[in-house]
Length: 266
Image 1 (cartoon, rainbow, N blue to C red):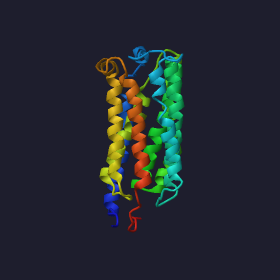
Image 2: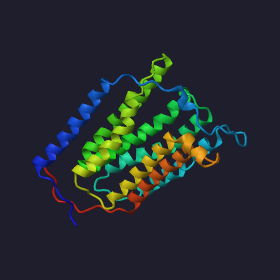
Image 3: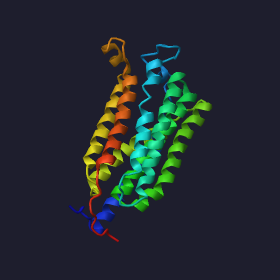
C-alpha cells in the first residue's frame, strides 16, 4: 500500500504551522519567570543503602537502559530505511540511552545539582534525537538529518544554562523543561499532520504511554513507596517504565517495514 502524499500547498501549510508553533513556544518561554531547581527534588522516598551502595534501588533500576540502548544500536544495523540518513538520529538516541544508564546511576548514587547535570545531559540528547528522527521520517530525511546537530547543541545549551545558573545561585530550568517536553508535543503532531512512511507507527503510542507512566511514577514517588509497603519507590519504577519506553521503540524499528513511496512534492 503506497503512502499518502500531500499536495504541495497542504505540505507547506503544515510545515508552516509547525514552524510557527515552535517559534511561538520558544518566544513564550522567555516570558515565563525563571524556574529554580527545588532542593527537595533530591530527597527521594527510598534512600536505603544495600550492599554498601547508597540509594540502592534508584541506582540499580537504571540498569535496563544499557541493554536496551545496545539492543537498539544492534537493531539499526539491519533496519530498513527509505534514506540512510534517517538512521543517524536513532543512533544518537540509542547511544544516549546507554549514557542515561550511566549518568542516572551516577546521579542517584550521590544526588545533588552537580551530579544531576550528568543525569539530564544524556536524556536531553535522546529527546532531541527522537525529534530529529520524527522530522526525518515524516517531513524530509534531509531536513531531519540537517536539524540533528543544531537540536543536540540546543539541548546541551539548555542544560548548560541551568548548570551555570546553579553555580551562581540563580538556576533556571525553563529551557531544560522546553527541550524535554517539546519533543513529546511535536512527535504526535508530526504523526497527525504528515503521512506515515513505515508500518507499525502506532507502536510509538506504547513509547508515549510508558513515558507518561514514568512521569506519573516520578511525581508520586513517596505515595508509591508507601503503597508498596516500603519495598519499591515510584522513582525506581519510573526508571523501569522509561526503559520500557525505549524497548517499545526498538521493537517498532525491528518489526516495521518501509511503505512504498509515491513521488514527493517539490
